[in-house]
Image 1 (cartoon, one colour):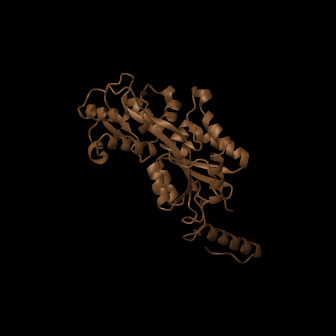
Image 2 (spheres, one colour):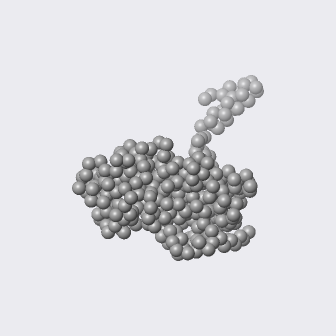
Image 3 (cartoon, helix red, strand yellow):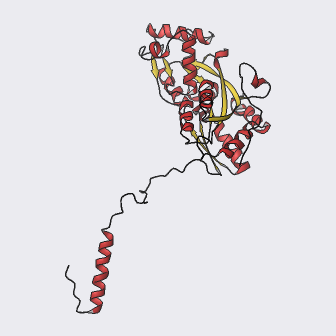
Length: 325
């Protein structure tokens, strides 16, 4: 560009134009702080007024999480941020320090989490039961069997290609999926070698409980569900409870904090406060009444001492968690 400098004003204007063009052509340096429009950044766990909780989809599907959030946030001003996923995924998130605590329902996975040093201060809070649901016509003929007998009969019918017999599994390493695998083992089968890939009758959904129920309904198949989620979805389903009794169907829920010695940035104090609230009489009463008005029965039964310390629960439900600032 040739600049006419014979007139002072013209020279000044030209210089300003050159500077403007140069600024417009400048690109941000690599690694700069600019964030693309629409890109969210994730703050680390541990904010004093934010509590991140990885939890099972069954508590979300049943509606209990929303009620806990409403009451606790109104009382304390703490922002509860729930991440609903399978129990296995929730515990993995906690191992990485991505959350401050977990609300889950797979005792064996929970114990391993604590034994490995990542989880502290476990407290069981409530229970309900798993149920096997399926078509009202019950093509496998498992109605009122024990859970183990029902799984043995389902396997025989499915592998023999009995008309109308199919089973939809969560298939997502959730607490429900862990319970299903345990039932197959108790029925005498190796889950990996004999159940998975055993034929078109057995389908792994890889989804949360609500979505799995919807898929099973579409295929008119059997599935294992927690009772709370089934009841909250019942008006959308043709499936009915087929097997609903048996000690093997116990479904216990627990809260566990992430160990700050493993992840110093977690909100350990907030986790302790929330766990102590969950085991308080106020919260237990709320949990014990939840669902009664809508479904005619509570979806969860709160745990109290000394019942929780005895079989089949064998857990701590009343001892306060130490709170350290």
